[in-house]
Image (cartoon, rainbow, N blue to C red):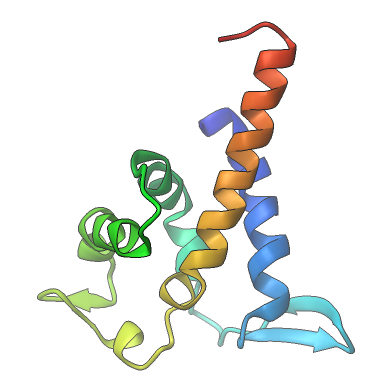
Length: 123
């Protein structure tokens, strides 16, 4: 996964950032993240853990992905205290808000990588 981190990051950014409520847009073109100074996007902060979380779940149910996300990522987030996330409660956590798009982007990259490996004869 680590060697493909950039590919995952780019796929997620292309799916999530243009529709994010925090995005600074010029017309329909994404310009930059509009989070206030000193605040980082949780997708960026926890990207390796998020990828590992998504790759560890084999289910058609979104609730299965969310349960593992809460256990593996949210439980260790600085914004979560005692299992309660203020950002999530205020619908202000991009990871929570766009998790379905994040999953889709990660699954897309994983499918591409598997196809490339099969073409190259790598199991």
